[in-house]
Length: 349
Image (cartoon, rainbow, N blue to C red; front, side, top):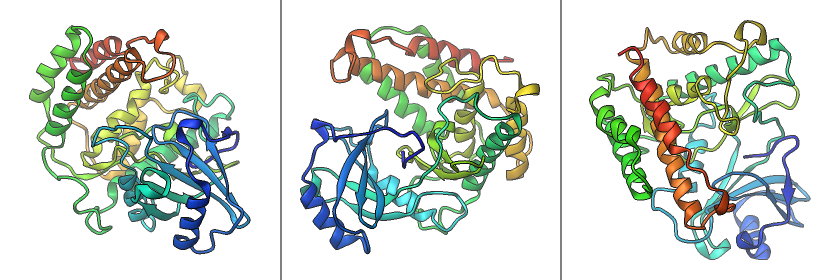
């Protein structure tokens, strides 16, 4: 995250510590006007890439870096995060200002980038209990409008022509998340086997292409401190050139999710709350993008939940291996998500 009202800062965790003086020297050489008197604190939270507040006499900046240790080649690619946000700077898609990227591990031990700090709000409860209905409506309207704006960007025109392949997105994604699941498999999950068998045959013939965020949801965007105005899209780690409806399906899983930590709209009275129904939210996106009715919407929702199920299996496997905190309390969320994914995929069939 870039920063938010109420964001918790703490001393840098021992496993993430680095040489502040070496960083300060690099900042001075690579970022104009970065200032002096560097103070480093760490944001407390669930970001997969450790994130730090850099405070100097010139102001505040944010540093995101790879975590320490052995990593999957395709994971924690902070250079891709930096590249896509830098490319989007003048497109109308709100992103923080990128300052510098460092891929030299000699500076602080891993690759990292530095961006401007933004003061704002990150809503972690999708029901927005502290807002008035009109503000809730505005927040969700902004969420839809910003996703539509992202998907309207010509990736070639902003220098991202080699950021990902333009065909076969769902084939590659299903293969990737199946492989990730197999690598973390701890038990036979019947619903996952069914999904792995059924999803490839349901891939739409529509080969639409856009910059795909990959993790677009309410918790990964920032709003103005007092206005219901979206000021930054964050957490671009999974971004690529992909299918725009993959982003929309994932975004709309909020209307089906039962997880308060991921984001859920269970129990919301859409007529009274100001929050749109799923149908109305999708219709607003389609209106903005000039898209007609979406054929086989169930595929996009089912795929989104399948992907989350695969991720959940990986989290569970790492917990069992003792590589994540609270390993003794590990609960595998994959079976439930897989059942839900299968139900969504088969809806109306």
